[in-house]
Each structure stands twice: as C-alpha cells, then as structure tokens.
Length: 425
Image 1 (cartoon, rainbow, N blue to C red):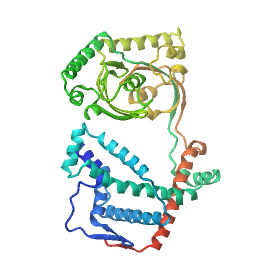
Image 2 (image 1 turned 120 degrees about the vertical axis):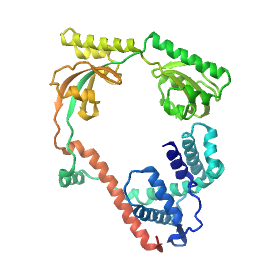
Image 3 (image 1 turned 180 degrees about the vertical axis):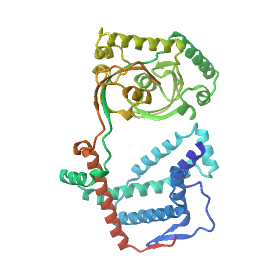
Image 4 (image 1 turned 90 degrees about the vertical axis):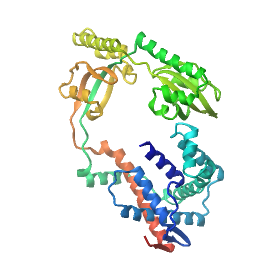
C-alpha cells in the first residue's frame, strides 16, 4: 500500500513514473495543440491508483480522459483570449505548498530524495515540471470564476420546494434519532502506568543524548504510528491545531532545538522544531503513550458502577453527576445532554443498549474503547419520511452545484463549436 501511495503522489505531481513510449501517437487536437496517447494513459493510470476498485472499463476511462484534456486545452485558449492570468508569486506559493505536502508523505528528506532519484528527477526539475501544470490549473480556475460563477444564482425557496416535491420519493428517510444524557468515565493511567512510560522515555532520551538521529529514534520508539513512519514528522501546523500543551512547547522552540519531555492527554512527548515561518511551525515528535494497567481499568469500571447505583437509587440527579464526574468535555457542562443524535452514529455497544431502553431509563454500564458509559434516554424519534425543512439546506447546496455544472456544460458546448477539435483515440 505504501508503494501505491507513493506512486500516486509522484504521478499526480510530475507524471514521471511512466517511461516515454517510443511509439507514442497523437490521439487528439485542439487547434494547433496536440494530445498524445501517453497523456491519456497517464490520466487513466492516475485514476486507477486513486480509485482501484472502480469497475469502469479502461476504454471508457480513456474516452473520458481525452475529453478532459480537450476541455482543459479549450479553457487555456479561452483564458489567453480573455487575458486571464495569474502572477508568478501566486504560482510559486502553490508550488511550495504542493511540494511540502509531498514531502510529508515520506519518513525523511533522504527517502524523499531517493524516490526522486529513482524516478530520474530532482526537486528543481519536479518544481519546474509542476510550475506549468500549476499555472494552467490556477488560470483555468480563475477563468471559471470569471465566466461561470457570476452566471450561477442561488436557488430560490420556490425552486428548492419544487425539487423536493418532484423528488420526494427518492429522498432518503430521516433516521431514527435519540436524545440522551451521557456520562463517560475514562480509564486514567495510575502511578504504575506513568512509571512504565517514564522508563520508556528515559530510553528515548538516552538515544538522543548519544547523538542518534531524531528521525531514527522516532521511527523506532514513537507510539504515534502515522508520524513514526515519517521519522516523527508532523508537517506544518499553526496555532490551535494541536492540544494546548503541545502547541505551547512547539512554538517556544527555535529551529533545530529539541524540547524536554512533557505530558499531554496523549502521553509523553519530545518535540524537535524543524522550521518556522511566520505563525506556522514544522515539527517532529516522539510520543510515548501512558497505557493504563488492569488496576486502572478496574477502578474506572467500579466508579461507573457506583455512580449508576447512586443515580438509580435516587440519591443523585443524572445531570448533576455528569457535570461533576463525566470525562466527556463536550457534554459535561450541559449535564451530559448530547441533543438529538442518529442512532447509527453510536458504537455497537451503545446501540445494543439503546435497543432495550425506554424513555427515562438509565442504561447498565457500557464499556467501549473510550471508557465506561452511562446513558439516560430522554426522547426517541422513530425513523420517518424526510420533511422539506429537514433537507432544505442539503437540497439548496445540491441545486446550486447542479446550476454550476449546467452552466459549465453549456459554456463548454459553446466553446467546442468555436475551435477545431479532432479525436482519434
């Protein structure tokens, strides 16, 4: 899977994975511009990488790819006629973002450059190749914003209502919903679990103090699987993207500096700041999770059972217990009230309990991956036919997008009559 993902990324950016075909042929023309068979095949291969399960035959995909390429060339010609341009600064900014996004998919800078070498290209060549594609894509988008978007009006209430009336039978029903109060008792690691994590972190520190590469240590020890595969690299992020403890440390470092260990809700971290630009930082980290032990699990289960007993016996109110003890930060302040939620949004353990609860009932203790739960069923709304008000917002957005597509199709049909087009696929 990793090889497939890497291939898709490189192909999407530069089209360098497929060797030039000495028997390449012209399969399309737009004015004096030609479209080669290899261009069509490259688009088909890219689509297959992105949607490997699509059963559409290759011949159909080739036909669609050729038409996409024709439309792209038509829009470039129209942009030239309309003097639509983008600045070099805008293009450079987009290229920089794209290259940075590409880098994040590799465990280290060395592995990124190794793939480029294997594909017979360099970072400068990749940028140069991508520059033309980026400028073209941005120019086309600007042309569409200029020629198509102004024609598209928001659907009127009358239009939305008429669409609802004529398509009511095909609009899915509203699902069954429930209103709950909820208490979560999370399993919190005790002193023994904290000690075990600290011991692992001491091993990590010893490796770093022995001048081992941060990326190598992260790949070996970090318990954040996604970033560990990239040598701990988290990519670029700004303020409010991470938990407060992590953000505070990350933004206090200078490029190249490595933090002391610190604790967040996820465990113990060490951060290395790689780069800083304005209010963005590029950082790597090593995470050692604090994993609760059996005693911690038993303690949480006992706490949940005790709270349930006090509520059921009438000694305490469910909402007040939620405000005092629940670890669900989203609902805690509201007395555990989750509002109306589709039943299918809950994990199976909760759905099983909901199936037997009546309004006003309090569940048994429910164990899930996030901890131990108590729920009180306040209201149940059965599945029902969708009403106009319940789907009005979605239908409005759908009709707006449809108008945009219809305008594009009409505009493109007109463009195709104004230019010489040849297809020989």
